[in-house]
Amino acid sequence: MIKRFLLGWVAVYTFNSLSGYLIHDILLHKTYMALMPALHSGDIKNKIWAFAITSVTGSFFYTFIYSAWKKRGTIAEGLKYGFFIGLWMSLDMSLNTYASTGLIPLSLALQWLIYGLVQYSVAGIVVSYVYNYRLRSPIPK
Image 1 (cartoon, rainbow, N blue to C red):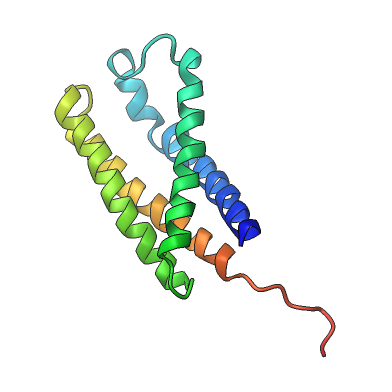
Image 2: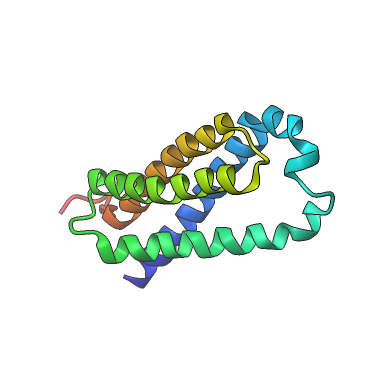
């Protein structure tokens, strides 16, 4: 059980890191550049540690909660789990940032919401696959 948890954690962390790069550094790059003076501070590279901490702890708790919540560990269960967690986390983050800072347009908040839903949903599939994966012997019995 600990091996599956650790493998799930690493898989979710890896998926979220790669998909986060795709979303924020490729798909939303032009939007971020247009908002650059207001959206990013000049010393963002000095604060990269904060991103690392939230990535590691976020993927840990995502996997931990899934391991306690799952019933059969099916792909459908993982998708449902990911969608609900994604709805909760992405809706809160995107709309709270929009409402409280005045730094981003509503269109960016909605993009964050949609991309977040997709990212969390696919991460649910990834973690459910890890938990449901069965090693099969290459030699028939």
